View 1: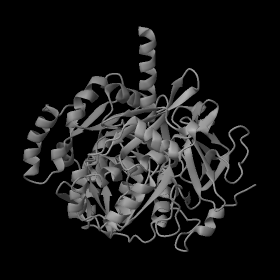
View 2 (view 1 turned 120 degrees about the vertical axis):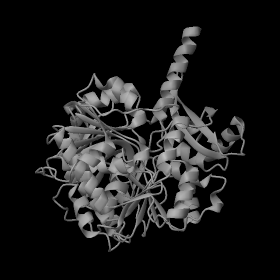
View 3 (view 1 turned 90 degrees about the horizontal axis):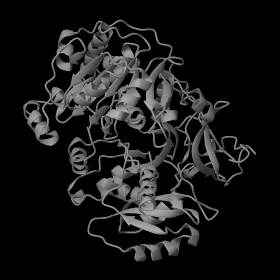
Length: 565
């Protein structure tokens, strides 16, 4: 049985099933936009604006400075910054200099930071002043030769730039004095001293890496995903085709998703640079700040994650803000509950659809149509030039329509493999197919559904239970704000179903009441045996709930209990 890409029959006429992709390096788009839209605003950051021409100029100066430090083609530059102008500048500067970007989460502990810097063999790191002590503590154990240091205040307008150091001192209880030295470089001085005359480097877009993007590490050590210029360019061009009603150089894109995550990098940063759109940079998610920003700055596109939309919908002052500028949102990183989708569309008047992808796929492979037929609960259909199949787990044969198996994908956005890790590469890349580790099925119309991560499936008393199905039921309860369901060790059933629940403000519900509700909507073997109410759930930087962390906590707890008996 072959699906023969049956989903193409549902494509609106405006979306091509195949695209001719540009064979040029990613940074070429900054030059193109600076030429076409020179004085148009490229960035907005806490009151400060920068034009495309200014952005290009500073990226070129930084590229020149990086090369003066001895950076050569193929060297790695780690960028440990939140969403701020310096993050965009250093990303494109590193690519201009011929280097490979290593995006680094500013929340990393010293242990996590040291692991990534060592594994990637980064030669240069760009970081915030408040992160410098962390970088300094691990630097001696890594290949890092130069640290470039900047501060949030460097790109704030007057008088915010004068006030911010005092806010920072109060917030972080630290003042970092950065002295220029042979190994430590102060951002503002570099920009002042450098020229735009950097040495252009020949790049083969299909072979040369632009990015080493580390996976979340929820299953063992993070792996460096190797993405070429072509991988990233292709995914942005697919994104542009999917959002066919958007107008070049006229959209305003809200950048709440962190750019150190590939989803924010592609759908906000690279897409905006390629399209000549203005992006609003927000260094972290704060529901009130986001609502105020939407109200004042009028963004039209808002890529996000379910936890971001949930946070906004449940803000007590939501009704005070006008969110009607928002026309389209693609949600990723976690399943989008139907109730959240409907409520957000009602509040904004725009469209919110679910998409799907992985770090290994630059990241998007599937999405629902924004302005055509969509199916709630589905991740939609594969993007142009993207093939997808469901493979049986036992036999690795293609599954029947409606049969659950492992989702595999193929297309121009698929990674080259894992950095220095051939064994893991061979485990997931087979005959051009990337095996995602996600379980799902395809319906008779070619729409795909994720039922769960292969690793998250719960096997209780011989039954296969998909946490996502239980979570969907819990999300439909009016008292539930956030939830995650996990399989925890059970001596009798192997695993048992546990639900971690955060309640909405002003709501209360007992375990018994929630249990009665679940029994009405789920088969008995799927109903959680244990409920734990929490004030918050552990999350990644893009708002993905860390189920694995909760399971590990549970195992530790059980181990402690057994040791005290």
